[in-house]
Amino acid sequence: MPRLMEVLEFLDDTGSTMVKRIPESGDTEIKWGAQLTVRESQVAVFFRDGKSLDVFGPGRYVLQTQNIPVVGKWVTSFGYGPTSPFRSEVYFLNMKLFPNLKWGTREPILFRDEELKMIRLRGHGIFSIQIKDAMLFLNKVVGTNAIYHDSDIEDYLRNIVVTRLTDILGNQKKSIFDIPKELNYLSVAVKQGLVADFDGLGLSLHDFYINSISLPPEVQAIIDAKTSMSALGSMDEFMKFKAAIALESAAKNPEGSASAGVGMGAGLGMGFMLPKMLQDAIQTGQGAQGGIKESPADKIKKLKELFDIGAISKEEYEEKKKKLLEEI
Image (cartoon, rainbow, N blue to C red; front, top):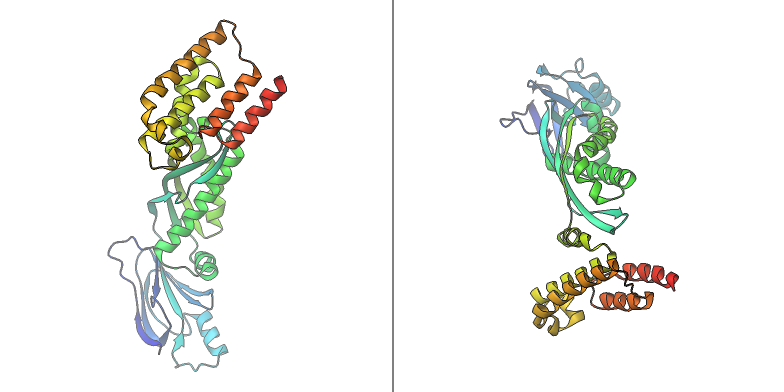
């Protein structure tokens, strides 16, 4: 049975509640003549059937048909008498600025790098918002999406942030090497897109920052390896170094999937194989500088060996094999 409300108010000691529904769940009936108290920085909105009805700013009110005309009209249209309790939800909205709300990618977002192909990125940062249109906010967020708990609202807004970030990265960036030096530019670009998104929800976006965009450890390891081998001057040497990394990982994790392709011997022989592979890479680089050039067939053979031990993906293998066959 619905509760009969005679006093409507919400006292938020923390000041951190964005939206409060009265009652928190279920239905309630409000008595004509009930007392409504709206505190500073609050707005109270009567809400029914997915729509905002009457809005009250800070102050104390006795609910009568004169000061809630929309509710009164709605009540009489359904045949309720002037003294009969009426059903409605009341939302108290905090109109102050909410600073430093955190956002982050719960799941990695896909990014097509021009060199490393498809990789997964994570990002996080902060943003600050303020409700500027209480009725629009309730109609769009509460009425359309049926969410009114602060945690659900913040999750909803974070999803919008991540979607906009994904769009900006995909449209404007070609390489992950461009990202670290341009975080400020990305923050501005994402904010510009979010301003319109949030404005359509009745929100003002005051600040938006990207604190970091991070790579999976395995991708970071490849980048570090490539940087270390850049002095050798060719992708062939880099791929040998990459193979050594794969074998080292197998040695450290004999129970993992990497060991399945190379067997237990990879782990046992790692101490001998890694130095030799590095030495071969260096010698090959020196030989290339002296005019000695491997045939495409030899390169394809080495490429196949790297693919067999899992050092390169099938896509990398096929792409490089195709280029080498064109040289024959």
